[in-house]
Amino acid sequence: MFKNSRIFVAGHTGLLGTALLAKLKEKGAAKIITRKHSELDLTDRGHVERFFREEKPEIVFLAAGKTGGIAASSAYPATFFHENAAMQINVIEAAQKYGVRHFVFYGSSCMYPRNSPQPIKEEYLMTGPLDEFSEAYAGAKISGVLACRAYNSQYRTNRFIAVVPNTLYGPNDHFSIENSHVFSALLRRFHEAKVLDKQEVALWGSGNPRREFIFSEDVADASIFLVENAGKLDNTHYNAGTGVDYSIRELAGIIARKIGYGGEIRWDATRPDGVSRKLLDSSRIEQLGWKPSVTIEEGLERTYKWYLENVEGAGR
Image (cartoon, rainbow, N blue to C red; front, top):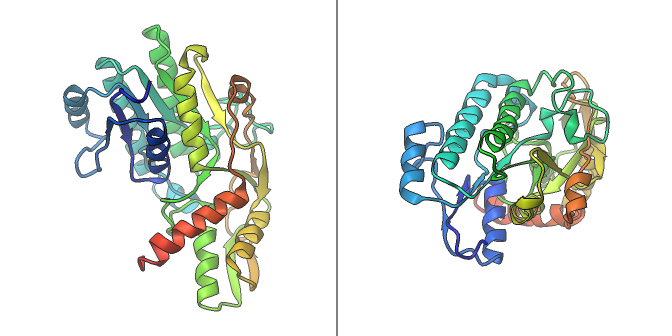
């Protein structure tokens, strides 16, 4: 399927996009199409139409999008909603219009209700209010999942596949203290504290919320698995997680030990925690035959190695 297909990976330089490129090359894919944002603005419908008309991709992975942590998503809700919603509908409509065989869309665990039962099943979507800090981003992602379902239903196809991974981490993430997700932000904070010999690191919140983390290559692998098994899929979205979660306090300890930071960790309870727990029920995709393979210890080691070589080593 992948060796002779024209495959467009949108967002190919990012965390998930680079993992997809690596996995697709392992599959023998030789006709991978990529574009930087400066070459193709996915929020511009005309640009997207022209690209699909000229390049004729057969398989599309929409790994592009506006992402960030609590601080960024709560400070710029309109930006998060507009950019993600515009990209999604432009690319999905073009995929239908120009006959893409398989299209993969990525949701987010923040799409589920703030107080959702745990672990979170796919059918819990839209059964309660969202977390206030991420509701704009979550709303855009919900619209993408519903679009996949609607296009499959109206056009009687199974080409539109929606995957909902839990919190991603791995090489090629961005490690901004202000805008990155918790895993990457903690890694950078503890590394810099070690280098500068700081006696204390102050972190947001109580440290009690629990999160599930999945390595980017595992999500790429799940994506390819779903494309290969498209004929077996129901017209719904599929969770992709590890089935294991950690409190932010536990995660901080794991990362600090790996990096070799021995100072004090202080928790600022005046800062928001976000949702208390987000653990996905991934039994639906597991019943089809997929499971993740990278432990958090292995994933952390590989991520930190990449950080030292590409962020710290490059002076960024």
